[in-house]
Amino acid sequence: MLVNCNSCQKKFNVPDSAITDAGRLLQCGTCGNKWTQYPIKQDSVKKISKTKPAKIIQTPEANKVRNLTKKRKRKVTLYSEEYLKRKHGLEIKNSIDSNKKTEKYKNITSNNNFFSNLIIIAIIVIAFFGILNISKDFIIVNYPFAETYINSIYEVVEILSAVISNLAN
Image 1 (tube, helix red, strand yellow):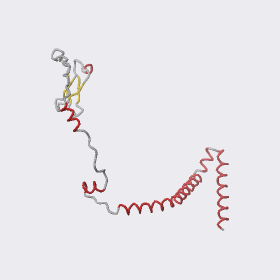
Image 2: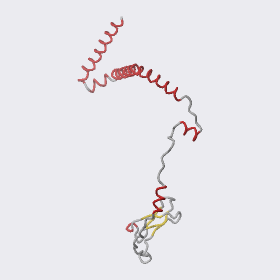
Image 3: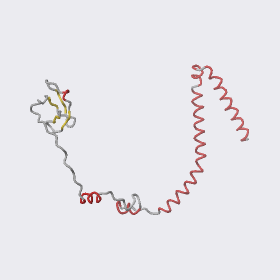
Image 4: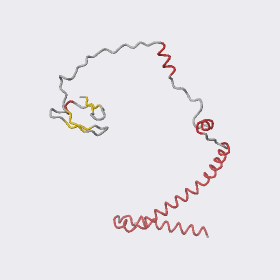
């Protein structure tokens, strides 16, 4: 059943079984208007006879119109210097020099990546041992078999620190 909102004239499609003889309270989803809808009697509904669709004849003029409406390719690429200058009034200066500068910085940053990664790994290891040291008692109480593993980790760290200090001297 096709139902119209009394306020905004929006049309809704409601199943016939949803509206009983006693009526049903409906609310418009667009404007929020509420009303009681009663079923429409079958006598008042006009039956529309089905007609055959008209046959469309293609003419050469219609084909010309379709050919004219094809999408055209852009002559200027977006974000090019000419386009930005003409459209937005932006001027890009020293674009060649800026490319050379970025190449210099790429070489510098690639050399620094090793040291920055080394520092990040050191911070992660230190954080791991700090968390392990804080929660060592809790882990041993809940998992008694882990005590030997934790003690061996600390022994290895002590041996490595002794070796590094001997190498530094």
